[in-house]
Image (cartoon, rainbow, N blue to C red; front, side, top):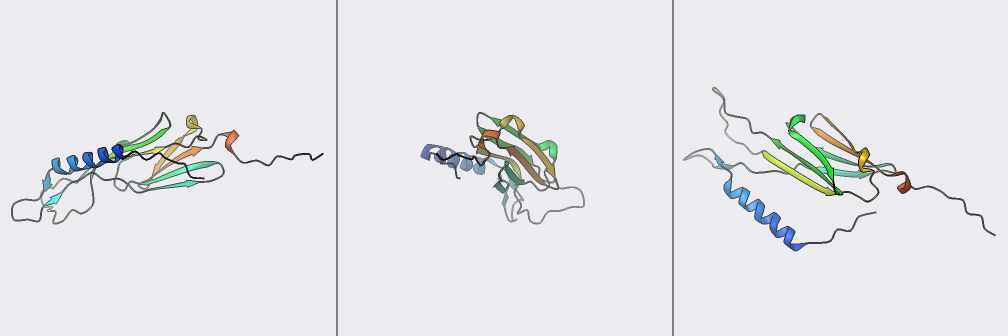
Length: 149
């Protein structure tokens, strides 16, 4: 069952304005006479899966260190934040093209009402963050026998 989320056009305008401001203030990589490349913020791809017992959020975070990721569940919202750092040019190493996105990321998701938020657990392995959100016992489907008179 999908949750219904109230559309707020002002939130979308704020998001768009924030992205535009970040895009215009990030430094370019490259120099005069070279193809200009702009470092930007990025949002990792996320899958959300539901089973009978839990919701599972899987986020792709390649080349992100575990210590650079923060997972918080507060006030009915799950927040995934962190940073993928750009590799610095070193002596003997020259970048010709940088197309992958780097920088700070933030993803937030409304928690379903049936999540047992005190039992949320996360694991990070091979560039994949998995957040397990168990359903509360009362929310799990069960069969009830009803005597018919």
